[in-house]
Image (cartoon, rainbow, N blue to C red; front, top):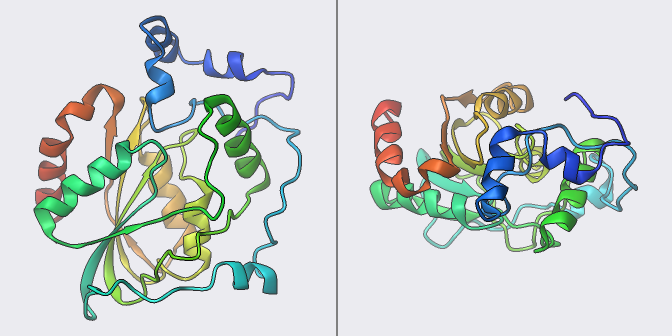
Length: 231
């Protein structure tokens, strides 16, 4: 990921996209989108207290929980989703309505701030440090599933760091992954590349992204994507 200079402010960071400027001029729509601005996070953020990956503290914080009571037998599929604003969750629910698969929420132990600017600070710091934010205690293991439809917002063109936490826990290893995302305007291509690098033994399929302009059409887009996957 290419870092921008530390002198860049969040406002100039948000203003880097002409599309985002237009959305703000029309009433701040960019602040309602799932994804953060498209530029890379700023350097120089303060260190957080996330345990170092691979340490006992990190393994304890991210120990897998039991699968949902409706958990599928071996060979089944789950829909796992991280959603901050609810847009990606709505897309996950559209996929669940057409597939009937278990829906698993990927929740952080410490929720992201509701304030947009504060959320930017946290998200930028996590990406700058390649952090692994802890999962909430109730996030179940995906070990019993062979296929995972994996949903997330696109942040700065990439997967959120909490998805890397899930991968470090072993939940995505060796599985068929069908990524889907919501975004202000970004492609999902870099996020798919992230997943392929993060999970080299997984079969990562082509992803679906629903941009802010197409949120009202997400059900039809989900149906078309599912039909093309052949799962």
